[in-house]
Length: 283
Ligand code: SF4
Image 1 (cartoon, rainbow, N blue to C red):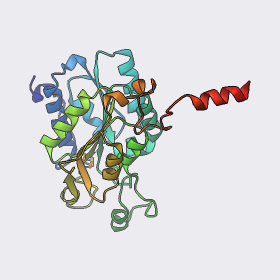
Image 2 (tube, rainbow, N blue to C red; image 1 turned 180 degrees about the horizontal axis):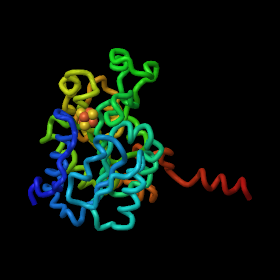
Image 3 (spheres, rainbow, N blue to C red; image 1 turned 180 degrees about the vertical axis):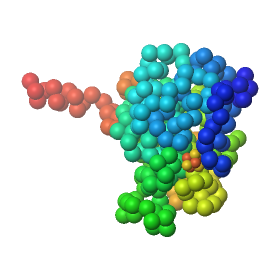
Image 4 (cartoon, protein in one colour; image 1 turned 90 degrees about the vertical axis):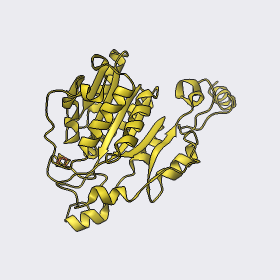
């Protein structure tokens, strides 16, 4: 299938210049790359401008309730494992109202892709600060919450044990297409942080300004190196690419059999001594 064949007859109502257009196009391209048939595709969102996206696709689409994309998407995948499931939403939907669901979806590690289209603002409700709005932007725009620092989405999901973590920019569609493609192909919960523009409520030139603060990951970056992934997540630049991909032997189901647990709490227990000791005390 071609990317355009995934589009429904609905025309997007996004503002001219909205970054969500780039994300929609890159996602359809990635779906075509992965040869996902529309009748085998489920796309779930919460509420917000970017959460309109499922309606623009030929798929089992559900524009659900605020912050609830992940439990609905997880339920869909568990009941219909034959579907490719993608959840989408914005930074407010995912990191504020819906944040409680994120670490638990990661812990369950259901095979699905979660793309957060992060424009650092609430667009649909006309420009309030979101959990990722930077402090200086709040100061310049006179937004509430100046004394609240933005959260770091990539560090957040890494610390929750997410097995696939990538970042891209909606203005770089070939790159975003590749990130979505790799996320869809990852056999577990995959997170894609998409830097996007709100052309109406963000600062002027926001998309360009953010783009100029992005760098590709270093050519020697090893996505299986969890410590390196954390370091890149804490960089003062937005690092683009696959930041972390858990090696197959370290996936939780395998790790439970004692093969290592990089990035998963608690640390791997090297032997059963501790358990045996606890058992002795109980007796
Ligand atoms: Fe996009 Fe912002 Fe317009 Fe919403 S308000 S459609 S996020 S440009």
